[in-house]
Image (cartoon, rainbow, N blue to C red; front, side, top):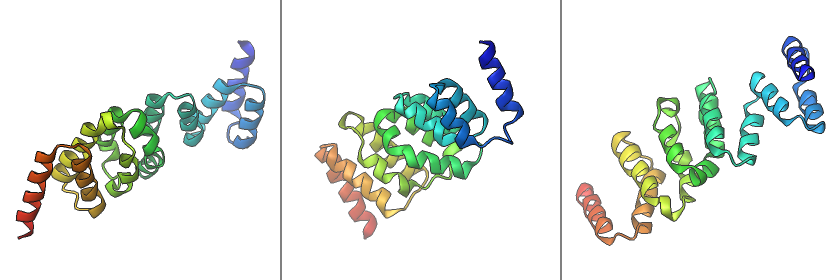
Length: 174
C-alpha cells in the first residue's frame, strides 16, 4: 500500500516531466492496470480511460467518462467515435446523454451509422429519439436523419404508422 501511495505521489509530482506513453507501457507491463487508469484520468488521456471501460464491458462508466470531457468539441467527437457501441449496448443511457446540454452541438447526421445498428428490442426508443427529439424538437432537416426516421417506420412493421407518415409527407410536399 505504501508503494502505491509513493507511486501516486511520484506521478503527481513529476507528471509534467514524464512521457505519458512510457509511463503507461511500464505500468501495463507490470500489471498495474488500476494505477494506469488513474494516471490516464489524471493526465486527461480520455481515450485510454474510455477504451479501458469499453474493454471491460462497463459501457455506463465509459459513457460517463465521455460526458466528463471538459472541451465540448472533443466530448462530441469522442462520443461519435464510440456511438455505435454505446447505442447498441446502453441505448437508453446513450440517448439520455445525447439529449443533455453536454451534447447539444453534436452533428445529428453523424449519429446515423450508430443508430442503424440498433437492436430490434430498442427500435422504439431509437425511433422516438430520432423522430420526436431530433426531427420534431430540434427541427433537424438533414436528409440522412429524415431517411433514418423513414427506415425506422419500415423496420417497426407498423403499416398504419407508415401510411400515415407517407400521407403527411405527401401533403407537406404539395
